[in-house]
Each structure stands twice: as structure tokens, then as C-alpha cells.
Length: 131
Image (cartoon, rainbow, N blue to C red; front, side):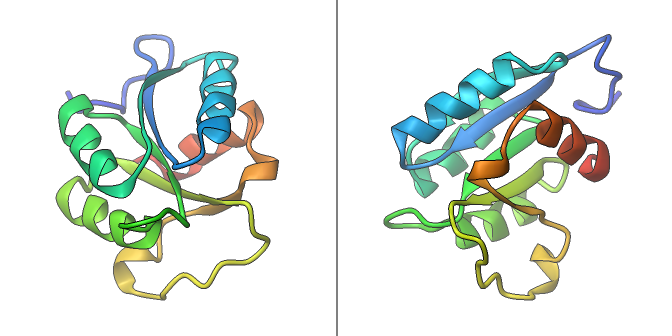
């Protein structure tokens, strides 16, 4: 049995939030708590700590801020896709448009605006992108 592929009735989707802004981490935590079938398993405030948290917590889905000091979201996404291909990575940004390299590794990573993030979007992202 692969983690993260059970129906929501049997196991919640485990979500990790990686964002340098505490306010968005709090919002994400509230959205995840309000979404049936999803649970927050942790948070990280930067790229390096986020990569470590993925290895330690084994989430099914990662919400990843694009712009963070130090190791940014694009590079973290590249590393996570290479190291943990079973994890659904979602890039999040406050900006309308972000230049995301068209590297083959990142083609399948969705990018969503923080302003649009809510239970319906969380469920849709999981439905469309889990393997």
C-alpha cells in the first residue's frame, strides 16, 4: 500500500506547509483543519528546514512558498521532486504571475495564488495531482 493514495475515508492527506511568513502558515493550518480528509503534519519557515521536514514527516502534499530568503521555493521544489517523487508539491505565491523555469521536473507542479487558497482549492489540487 502506498501512502497518500488511500481514500480520504480511510486516511487523511498529510500536508506540510513551507513558508517564511508566519501569517500564511497560520492561514494554511486553519484551511487544512477546516478541510475534511486533510491534516497538517507540520510547518517549516524556510527551504532547508522544509526539505528536512519532508524527510522526517513524510507528508503526502507540500504547500511551498515560491519566494523565501535563502533557499527559494523553486529550488526546493526541484529537490523535493527528485528526492520524493511520491509527494505532491504545490507552489504558492502572493503574486499574480511568477516566472517558473520550464524545466521538465517542474512542469507538473501547480502554482496557485495565496489569495485563492481555501478548502475547495486544496481538495481540487489533491484530486488533480496525486498519483
